[in-house]
Every structure is written in structure tokens, then in C-alpha cells.
Amino acid sequence: MFKAEVSALQLEIGFGGGEHLLHRAKEMPGTGFIGVEPFVNGMAKMMTALAKAALGNLRVYDDDATRLLDWLPSASLDGIDLLYPDPWPKKKHWKRRFVGAANLGRFARVLKPGGRFRFASDIDSYVNWTLLVCRAHGAFAWQAGEAADWHQPYEGWPGTRYESKAIREGRRPAYLTFIRNR
Image 1 (cartoon, rainbow, N blue to C red):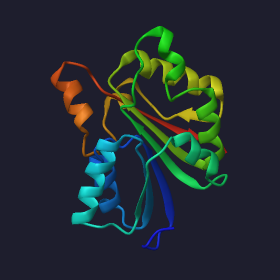
Image 2: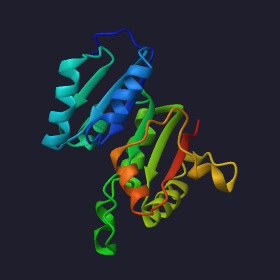
Image 3: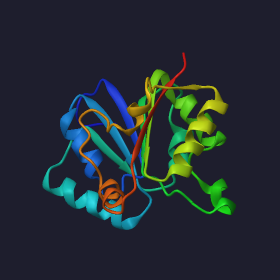
Image 4: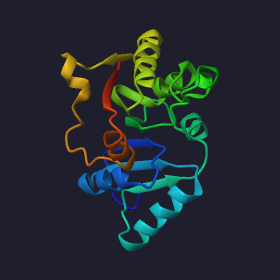
């Protein structure tokens, strides 16, 4: 599956231009990364970057993430990142949000016990939604120990274009980490 030998497997859903995914793949050569991006512009940017510096621990998928999640073996992933997904801010569109019972079921199936689901967003209603839906699902435990935890970027976080835009526009990003219950 990977050209490099890997001992862990991470998935990033909706990698956009791929800045975060490329950073992580370079930073962790012993981890296999799968990036999913259905939009042509994001995939084109990633392929341009990979043409300059091929990474043996990185694979990409250019279709719907749910198809990949349904195909992956159970308990095969060490982590899933969903960073700045489309918030679908109108209430009538909330059913389109990627974080929901069906996809959390998929996450729970493919994550190893103790695996991490990381979610970042600058849209308060989507952050609240994610907290409530994950709590209701029951397969995930939120890892915040104190109020400030979820406003601290992840360790080694390189930032994203969407995060920079949010900060420029006065929105405060949130960084949620959930652990797959054993």
C-alpha cells in the first residue's frame, strides 16, 4: 500500500491544498497517511507538491471519504483528522455536516481502540454540534482537561489556510480531540 515501511496509519479527510497533510507526512515518516480530497483544485495542488518531493508514506484518494471509510478494515486507523470542514451554517443544511451519527459510526469501526479523532473549526455552532454528537454517540471520549485546552492548537500544528483566514476575520479556532473508547 505504501512505498515506505509504516507502523501506524492516519487519515485526513478534506485536506484542501494539503499543507497540513504534507507537513505531518514529512514530520512522521514511519506513519502512513491517507488524504481524502474530492475537489480537483485541492488534489491538483497536492499532486504538484508531491511531484517536487515524493513521499513514500503518503497516499491520496479523490472521491467521497465515506466510500474509503466503508472499505477500510475494522480497527485499521490510529487517527482521523477532520480540519475545518464545510460547516453548513444554515440549520436546514445541518444534516449535510460530515460529523454525524452515521460517519461517527464509520470512525468508530475503523479506529483502533485508543485511536484519535481530531476536529478543528472556527465555527462555534459546528464545534458545539461536534461535541454534542460525539457525546451522544458514545464511542468517543473528549480529551479536554480544562476550558483552555480546546483553544490550544495541536502539538506540532503547522496551521492551515482556513485557520489563518478565521483568525484574520476575528473568529477563534477550536481544536477538539476525541479518543476511541476501548
